[in-house]
Each structure stands twice: as C-alpha cells, then as structure tokens.
Amino acid sequence: MTGPDLGELQRRAAQRAAARAGGTDRLRGHIVCDGLVRIFKTEGVEVVALQGLDLVVDQGELLAIVGASGSGKSTMLNILSGLDVPTAGIARVAGFDLLTMTSRRRLRYRRKVAGFVWQQTGRNLLPYLSARENVELPMRLAGRASRKRALELLDMTGVAHCADRRPNQMSGGEQQRTAVAVAVANDPEVLFADEPTGELDEATAADVFVALRTINAELGVTIVIVTHDHAVSGQVRRTVAIRDGRTASEVRRSARTGAGGAEEIVSQEYSVLDRAGRMQLPAGFVDALSLKDRVQLTLETDHVQVRPGDE
Image (cartoon, rainbow, N blue to C red; front, side, top):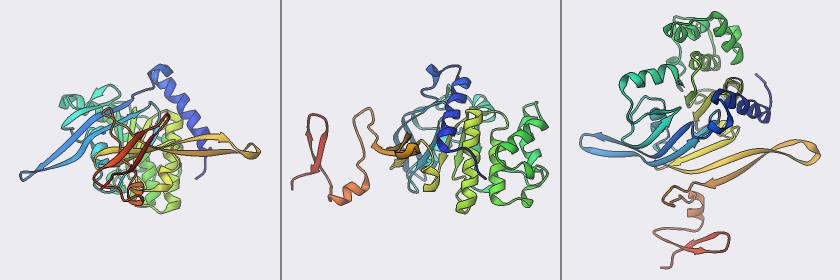
C-alpha cells in the first residue's frame, strides 16, 4: 500500500484538525496530562506506574509514545482511553476530565470520543462478522448505521477488497487495517493504538501505519500510538519517550527543502522539563560520563553545563 508523502499528509491533517476544532485558536491541549499519577495496590504492596507524567497533544496530531516495558506507557494509554482511572493529577481529553467523570459519562466518552485499536488482531474484530459488518456495528449501536460510510472507511484504510471477508479470511495486516476503520466508525475525536504493528512483519506494519496516517490526514482525528517499532515512531512529527513513569524526552521532526530542492525530514531530540524544573538525562549520556548520585551544574550565558560531581 502506498500513499502521499509524510509532509503532504501532515499538512492535510493540520487542515482537517483546524476545521474540526472550529479554528486554529483551539488546537492546543486536545489531550492534557499534568502531574499524572497512577498507583496500583496488590496484596498490600504499592506499585507506582506513573510518577507525575506531563503531556500535551495538539488537535489533529499524530503522536508516537515509546518506552521500555514497565515504563508506564500502556498505563497512560489505558487512562486516556477511559479503560483505567488515574490516582491523581490531571488527565483531560477533548474536554472530558478523566479523573472525575461519572461512569455514565465515561461510557459516552468511550463510545463517541475515543477509538481504540489493540495489538492482538483477534481483540479488534468479531469473528462471525464480515469486515463491513464489523465497521457497521458501532454505527448500528449508535443508531446510525451506514453501509456506504463503512465501505468508505474500508477504502480509506486500504482494505475495501475485504468488505465481505470474515477475519479468518484476512491476513493480520488486513485485520488491523479493518480494526482502524472500526475504531473511527463513530467519528471519534481521538484514536489510541496499543502496539498496532507489534505482531506484524515490517512490510505489513508499514501498510497499517499508512492507514493510520491516512485516517489522521483525511479525518483530522488525533492519534496516539504506543509502539516499540522504531520504523513507526520515526515517521511521525513527534515521538515522546517515557521512562520510569515520566515523560523523559521527545523527538520533533520537520520538513525542509534540501539540496536540489528535494524535501527532507530533520529530527531534533529534546529532554522534557517539567513545571518543577526537573528533567531526565538520556541513559546514554549518564553511562558515557559515569554519572551517579549527584552532578555539577554551571549556568552559562546561553546554556547549562552538566558535569560529574566531585568525589
């Protein structure tokens, strides 16, 4: 499956997002996490999965979240999708306060505001329904089923040829692209995807990501992807890394005109500074200089020096 280049899709996504938001002034803060905390208690033992995580996602953005197992990224995704409730802090999506909203409002949020794609292909589709029927089902439950719209979404995700096939008649990649169509059937404002390419080979994973990029560009849906796939995280405008329950760093990518007039993508990595002025040094930096316990900071005119502390 092929499609427009990354720069073109990003421009179209921004236009769709602006139209969806009713103007560019409302683009900031479509998803907001501020000091987000999640503590799990098991047999008297407390496990802190999120330790004051901060994150802001723009309307219509396509964002990748990366991090090692146990870093807290899946916990954050479960909270944002309405599947879990934070212990403290602020978690707000499209005006919904995920910390305080009632069970009825949470159900409405999950039905109409947030779409979700699981890693396991079998969790996304009902096995006894065709692809078209799977896409139509959420619309039927909302009282507005449309065969035409279902076929449009399947075409948008590149699996129109699977409309009359059941999941066991489709490949894993076709199932995931169908799952993306199901997730946006009720026109949600945000789409969360938990390792959507985790069980797929590289070529098939690329097709699934093209489907996500197309949905983002054509519908203006804000998309947050949790992934270990560097091929996926390298194709979005912003990749946020989570470590030890906090946002640690982010990579921002932008298009520029290079030599010969060709468009090229430029990447810049940043450490994330929270409201208290805290940041996490990259693990590679810590190892390279054998940093531990404490460091020396020196304020210069336009930067801060970080050096190993004296013994």
